Image (cartoon, rainbow, N blue to C red; front, side):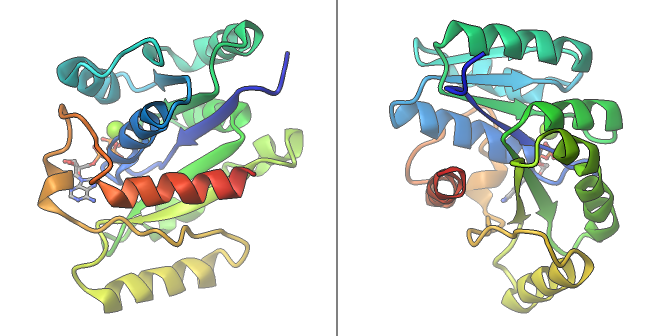
Length: 211
Ligand SMILES: Nc1ncnc2c1ncn2[C@@H]1O[C@H](COP(=O)(O)OP(=O)(O)OP(=O)(O)O)[C@@H](O)[C@H]1O
Ligand SMILES: [Mg+2]
């Protein structure tokens, strides 16, 4: 096994937080910037894979596959051994603790999008604590909480970030919040581009966290 491949998973127990909306643009923008990327969909409703297919995103630098939680480790062992992929991005299903913990256990960085103002906090706290065992196995496991659907009301964004920091004092919250926008609401099935600059910014921030 080499450490050439970096694995990034989007997880959140709560449905509709923005896992798929975050991980697909990040994966695609990373490939557009020159990285060799594999996007892995662990959701039984494979909306990331459907997005990739609908928008025709695959290329020699961008592959997409779908696995169950129990197949993930084997696929990643193959990918790591092949030395042909720089970044693996994993989309996970909501509510499936086994899949979430499997994804966390294989990751270098866990992204946790939260739908701002939607009462996601208890689910975020629960998801955050699922990192306990994966962290014991990999003390270098990093995480970033991503405030999604932000921006329309700055006071709500600020209150959410404060509530996260009160509830989870050790948690890292990304500086880049993703605003609610019509463009992002209609993103699925379309080709991400650098004008989606929140995801572009987030990708830069992620690379700094991983450096
Ligand atoms: N920043 C945003 N602005 C506008 N709409 C958004 C934004 N983020 C996500 N959405 C919309 O919110 C809904 C849920 O997002 P998404 O499917 O990415 O969440 P998810 O966490 O992957 O959901 P699931 O748990 O069902 O897999 C989708 O309709 C998506 O288009
Ligand atoms: Mg999803």
